Image 1 (cartoon, rainbow, N blue to C red):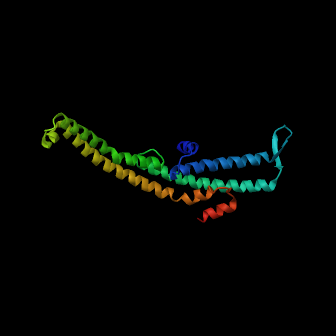
Image 2 (tube, rainbow, N blue to C red):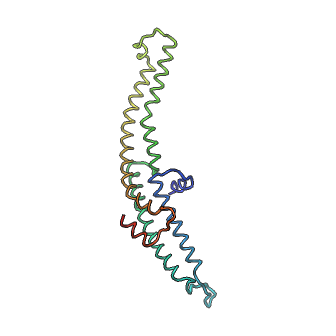
Amino acid sequence: MELAGRHREAKRGNDPVMDLGVTILDLDDQITDLYKSIQENTLFEADDEFVPVTVGFKNPEKVVGWQEEIADLQGLKAEFESYLTSIEVVFNEHGKRPVGLATLREELDSIIDSPNALSLRITRRVRAMIDKNPTISLALVFADPDVQTLELQKHEAGLAAKTEAEAIRKLIDKIEAIASQTKEKITFYRHPGREVTASMMCEVEAL
């Protein structure tokens, strides 16, 4: 949820995992605001010991409506939290800390690209040898201990990258499968210009 908070403050692009966390934070804020509205609408009187006690509301009908909204929003929040918990479980199963899908994709790209750094080092080494001795044969170039070491490292890095990349792809697929279940409900909740009401929640549940 800390990541979601930073994501909300930074106003970054869409990320299904981060959007889920941000939506939970927004729901929590909306519920808090509704409780404040009820408190501001509450009438108090002091009892015999001068302790404030609730005696009613300035506008009972509004308070009933707010209470219904709170119940609906709490239900939606609990549902989103269950999805978030499922996502956290998947991350734990893969031995990774929870992050956004965008971060996972960046990590995947970095893993796939990792052998390329060694390819560049090999190219630089070969060019340096040729620049030093333009008549050197390719056999001698690739027999060079440094070149052979780099080639071996590149091969090992390629195998490791393939394994790591496959693991990240599987993780991404699992996270996307869970996050996709929340997409329509989050979109509905965030529809511009609308406040979530009890009747709207019925529509959400039907999605």
